[in-house]
Amino acid sequence: MTQLSAVSLGSKVLLSAGLVATGLLAACSSPTSNNEQASTSSSDTTATAAPVAPANSPLQVVAQFREPQIVGVAVLPDGRVFGDFPRWDNNPVAPIAEIGTDGSVKPYPDATWCQWNETVKNEPQKHWICPQSVYADRSGMLWVLDPASPGIKGTVVGGPKLVKIDPKTNQVTQNISIPESVASRKSYLNDVRIDTQNNYAYITESGVGSLVVVDLKTSKARKLLATHPSMMGDTTLNIKADGHEMIDASGKRARFNSDGIALSQDNQYLYWKPLTSYKLFRIKTEALRNPALSDAQLAQQIEDLGKVPASDGMEIDAKNNLYLTAFEDHSIKRRTPDGKIETVVQDPRLEWPDTFAFTADGAVYVTNSAIHKTPTWNKGVGKQDQPYHIFKMQLPK
Image 1 (tube, one colour):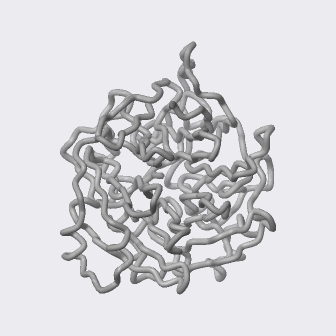
Image 2 (image 1 turned 90 degrees about the vertical axis):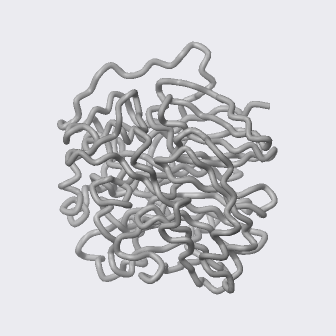
C-alpha cells in the first residue's frame, strides 16, 4: 500500500513513524552506512505502551523492525520473504530487502540496486528510488513497483518503473519504464497485480487517482480513468484510526486516492478502492486490456460493489473471498462472494495493517505500517509505540 499525504490534494503520503518528513530529500542524497536495517526508535518519536497481543490472536510475528517503516511484503513458493521499505521519511539501506529467518535484512537484488544518491542520479532506471510495492506472481517471479517519488514530493524524471526479478538467479529480467505521460510528476504508483495468463500488469496510482495498465509483452503502459470518482478519496467521511480523525498540520483531512487492488482468481475482474472511501469497485480486465475503449466507455463498465470498511491493502483467496486490511479498528476483514463482510482477526498490534501476501498452503502474511502514528498526522511528532511487523496466520476455512 500506501502512504500519501493530504498536504497536496489528491496525493497520498504515508509517512514513516518517528522520522521527520522535511529531512527526506536530504537523506536520500546522503545514504546511511550499510548497517543493519532495523534500529532503535528515533528521538522525535513519543513512545507509549505498546499494544499487547490478545491471548487468542492467530497472528504470529515473522519479523519486526523498529525502523525504517515497512509497507509491503511478498512471499515466494519456497518460503523466501521480501519486504518493501519506501523512502518516505528516511533513507533505508535496503528499500527492497530479503528478510532472513532470523529477521535480518539483506538489500535485494543487491546493494547497487538499493543505492540512491548523487553518484547514481543519472541512472534512475537502475536503482530503487522510492519503491512502494513488492509482489510475487503465480509463477514465482518477483515484481517491484517504484513510483520514484521520495517523500511523495514529486517523481524523479525517468524513475517510475515496474521491474521483474527472477528469484532463482536474483537477476532483473524485465525493467519497464513508466513514461511521464502515464506517471506524471504528481503521480504515485501504489500497488500492482500481475495477470500471468494474459501477460498484463494492473497498477493503482494514488497521486492523481487512476489505473495504469501495462502490456508486459510490449512494455507499453496506459493511464486510465484518471480522476474518475471511483479513483478519488473522499474527505467528507471523517475516517479515523485509533479513534482519531487524520488531519495534517495545515488542517486538511487525509485524502488517499486509488490504492488497494486485487485480481480475481480467474483473472477476469480487477477490484480496487480509494483508501479514504467506504466503496469498492471492479471492472472486467478484458475491458482494461482493450486500447480502443475510451475512459467514458470504461466508466460505463465499472461496477459499484457497495460499502466495505476503509482499508489499505486487498487480496483475493482461492475461494474468491476479498480480504481487506481495515485500519480503523485494527482488523482484517473479508468480503465473501455474496457481499457479506466478516472479521477474520482483530488485534491491537495491527496498527494500520497495510499489505498482504498469500501463499499456496493457505497462509497470509500482513504488515503493519502505523501510518496514523507518523509525524504528518500528529503535528510533527511521531507516536509510534511498537515495532513495525510482518505477521503470519492461516486463512480461515
